[in-house]
Length: 119
Image: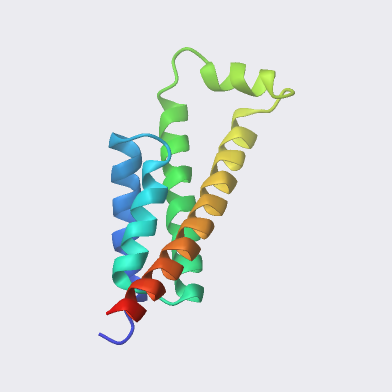
């Protein structure tokens, strides 16, 4: 398979969502590092796919959890951070996911390169 970008994106999107849903907030980053290293994507693809998949995953989870918030915890957290609205809190969460996915993809690509040289 010469162009595996779409498959890698789907695997990373589904895996990051599931690991974030069932694990701590940093579990999707660890999943992306391992998946990128195993798939041995080049740095450019790994950074773009990792950033987009984790950013979309964090966006989906934050919107979903915002709709389930009965105690107004997101509003109260936004008030503690200087009066941020829930929409801005979702945007900040998405940016954090995007940057975390970018760095995870980069690290996984580098580890995949090291593993490739050993074998």
